Length: 339
Image (cartoon, rainbow, N blue to C red):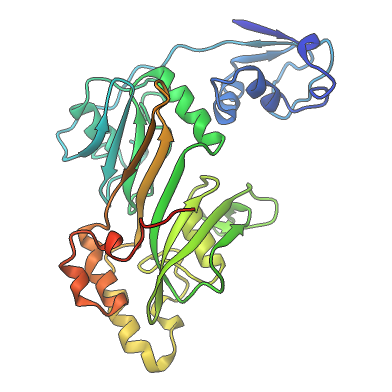
């Protein structure tokens, strides 16, 4: 157990939230990791029997932090196809296919990315727990693309901290209905669970801070191809934020709010044809940049527009040549510049 005494705090710390204070004292752990330690009873506070993340810090406080052993991996290996783009002793970067859930949960006990990783790799960090070994960030089931996974506990802690501090750059390609009013645009709108449907998110005052950066790559008749960069990483963030500014993602069955029906009636047939060609939300994690958590070496990986979404992209662009392009995103200039 590591004891942190209140007299370590300077004037700037007095009155600070407990989770913020501990994050500053234990830089290897992210704030979300600290909050989980508090919730699981691994943090003690001399003035509180029931410790909470928002407890305040005062001079003279004594705080104990017990670092639990990494939980054993319980998910079972499964021989599922997996595209690995980078792999060493500490991290692995994979190209997640659409339709694959990242980790086992209620209703999805198998067939997940974690099950595939356990088959293809010799070890994963146990910090994420029995169901989430190595997982430091996620993609929605029907969002394809790049995802970094931790193989060592050290890499897990450092990657989680890097994501928390916005040092991991995650860039997505998105085909959206309509046109951005300006580009680039910063969408700063808090997100919370939808009170009418807890499986969905919504923009709501008092929700968690969320920021998305969107830039126009190509403008088509009824849709825009955007480069979208995460400022924060909330559940369904990109999908909800783009819908919030009037440009929902083509093929998104939960947040499209009208889809092709939003288009001018004279062009409705063309728009409906585009909607019919969308097998899922046209959102793809196309670029991932970060410093290696152990060596510090800069890593940048890219992933091209997936095959199942190419007919819809070609239809939106009115360019059948896109179907023959091996690298449609590169062809459209998606990787030519970056923010």
